[in-house]
Image (cartoon, rainbow, N blue to C red; front, side):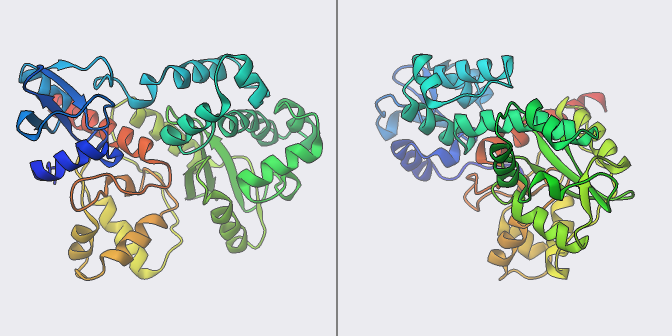
Length: 356
């Protein structure tokens, strides 16, 4: 099913509450002003009888409404926040810079406000994001066979203990615990939604996660146990293949992933993942839909747990599962990424239909 709007009563309650679960899923047109907004718009809320709800921003435009100049409904949410946009530009221009809260204040921003804004949009703080960009350089150095000290310097860390601590927070183990030429190899895969970490053996992909996901260290520890400690840094052919397929996916060309997988889950969990992979591009399902499809309609909660246990993001599309009321629900990579993936897949489907 494609996303269907809940009742107008539910949407109006979400509008009054500025409920972020409907961000990017519904828009409201105000008949008295001729303007349409996000449901999270900070403007004064209109009366119920003056509201018209839309499934897409295009629908509001076609109905004759103009875009609000306060919430910018045609622009991705994070990009409408000036301080987020400016700091992101500075970070991308100089990913090796060691940012501190004093640097943020010197740039003219309140550190606590910036901290809240980045957590709201991305699930991590600006300083955590900056540290992630620096660690990427160290990871690349290790992947190319460099020494740990070289990786430390490439990542912009003066202190070896600081580099070890940051690396361990990200991957669950100190860099010296990783080495080249072992049974499983981990490497960094760049995407427009942030870096991902892939783990593969010579034949199959075992893990694909966004690097800032909180569960990543524990997932890598499970893989280390599975591989009896034989896990290193580098890449095999499956990582090369998934990197190529992800590039085509993010260009909006296709969502046809052919990289062979090894899945680490119970029989029930793998049945859920099988069903996730049957959801067509640009369509969504609820947990109850998935439970019914596998013949266990009372197992919606177990389906939700299996969905959250997915270790191969995007390829096993857990982002296509939404709430029964059509709202976005939890996603390990962050709801902002979930919305962007759903939007991207709508474009992929549209491009495919146009080519047909």
